[in-house]
Length: 322
Image (tube, rainbow, N blue to C red; front, side, top):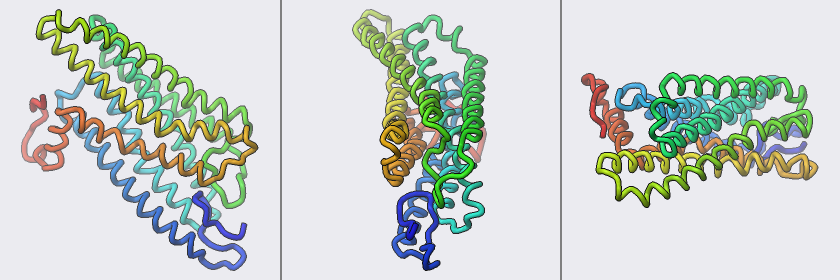
């Protein structure tokens, strides 16, 4: 390959002349700036969510613990995946390239799987909260939620191990593919297990929730004020989390769809297209904290107290946020 000025994980020098490629160096600077800013935003936003849920006792609810699991996965994306990806792009040390590629790929699969299975658990939580409110407190307890979180991360870890074992020993020269697998069957199976099945499950559950919430909205006038207020809070929470799921699916669907079609098209999809879709998926880790802050007044209050340093001046863990 004469030049690697393609948006992919390739070295930034001209192999034949052994000199820097000007276009590639320019792209590397822009990618470092973009990747650095995105990484900081992801870590800052999700760290606010994590501190809020851990510190404020009012936020110690089953739903928020599931959101905590999601925030941890998103935080680790900003802490590890994006820096590794930038290093893979700008590094000229080929003896480290393969190792970094495998580490980045394994962590990427684990964190992506954890995120989507956490969202799947959140959809189950919302199903009981809206569709079976009388059984919600007995079915979705803190203990049950922690078991769900443990199962989600266990599935993610196993998926990462399978990815590591199934990844080819040697990829294309000077490339760290956006997705690596030995066979087309492995790609399809991984996409279905990591994304397809959970996505269909979430879509089906939220469709059911939407139908039930519509019926509740028509009968809410006949409720007493306290019941109506509870129903309104649950429906708002469901709507907010449905937006989180929708943003997640819009961010990741292009990537998973493209790698599913990649073998079918005889690997004709350009590498920079796959990488662009991959970065779109990683960017999703930045969106959730902004969604929480926009829709939840208690998260806005918590974020404000953390950013201003108020929680460091006294014990506000029992503060009334809403």
